[in-house]
Structure formats: structure tokens, C-alpha cells
Length: 270
Image (cartoon, rainbow, N blue to C red; front, side, top):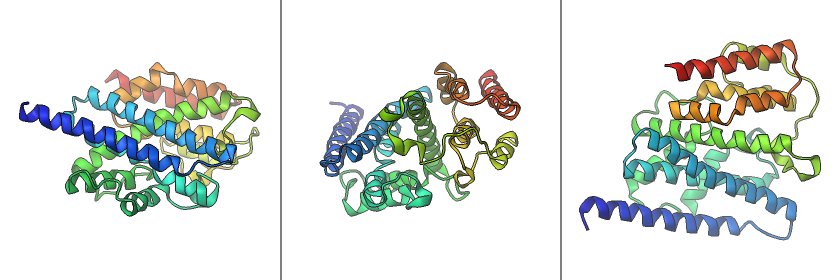
């Protein structure tokens, strides 16, 4: 076997082993509470889809096997703190519990989940996991750390759009209620949320007062997408338009939708 083939085979084997270990870790949280189990499974399925999305985006950028390995391992472990978060606090809302990314780093370290990979790769993955949920990336994050964090942030958003759209389309009794963060499903929208979006900015989660605010925040995620393939996926799956259809069509919401849709079109015209 050629050296490059051997290295690729090693990456493939390690990914398979890491996924097996990950599944065993998640299984430890399963019990007799059907609602609790539903939330755990929801996060596990999300994680596996993010692994696929990140490789789709990575392949569009011509990543080599090393890059694909770092990307997939980062995606696999990006939400590993969510299970302990939900066990402790009964919520996925960081503001009402603790930062799930920092918790995830602790879980990885305490359980020695990445001991099979090279130390420099381990540190890179931990950096990506710790920064994937920040409102904006710190200036100190550069090089591979910044690149792979951007890649993960895009893949994560792409699957969360899928998750929330399924939530909005489901009957009340069939929903995984934690997805809505306990926000009231009424016609209200917050002025602060609208101002942020009309200024072309991401919305801070603490500004949300209603489920419509949450939907507007999700529309605004396009302002944080980093790669052309990510914008292509948003357009192909009509994520923004489908969120818009679940909302009241007021002048300010119509204006925000138009601005966000135009931003996506502009990014794809270059």
C-alpha cells in the first residue's frame, strides 16, 4: 500500500472507531423517559447529518483526506456537550444552562474521546468545537482553526435549518418541544431583532422574546455563512423562503425577508 493510501485508510478506520465510541457515549444517556430519549436522539441524528453536510462543503473546496478527517471529527464532536447539558438542565438553551461548546470540550477531555488521534489534530478539533457556537469568531483564531470553525459553523446552520423547519411543520403533540426554546408562539416580533437584521447583522439570542424572533434570527444566519456551497444549499432547499412562509407577512417581516433573500442572491452572483 502506498504511503498516501495507508494514511487515508488510517483516517477511515479512525473515523469509524470514533463514531462507534460516540454512539456508545450517547447510549449511556438513554433511559425510561421517552421524552428525554427523544431529545437525545434528535441531537444524535443532527450530529450525523452535520458530518455529511461538512463533507459536502469540504468537497466543494477540494479538501484532501487530512482536511476531510479534521472536518468530520469536528462535526462529530461539536455538540457532544449537549447530552450532559440536557441531563443537567433539561434545556438546550445555553443562556439558561451553560455554554454547550465549552461543556463539550470538558466532556471530550474527561472521557479522553480523542486520544487515538495525533495531539496536534486533537488540539485543532478542540479549538473548533469550542468556537463553533460563538456569535462571532475571536480575532485570535486564525489559520486552520479559523478555517475549520467556519466550515463547521456553516454545516451546523444548514442542518439546524432542516431541524427547525420540521419543527414548524409538525403538529404540536409531535414536536420535540425543546427545539422551540420555550418561546411563545404568538404574532410578536421584537424591534431590536428587526433592527439588527435590517442592519445586516446576526441577532444575539438574548434579544429573542418570541418564536417569530427565533425565526428571524434563523433567517439572519445567512450573514454568517462563509462558503459558496453553503449559499447554494440554502437556495436549493429554499430554507429562507420556507421559514418566511411560517410567519405573519407584516411590512417589517416582508422587508427583512426581501433583504435576506437578496443577500443570498448577491453571494451567488459573484
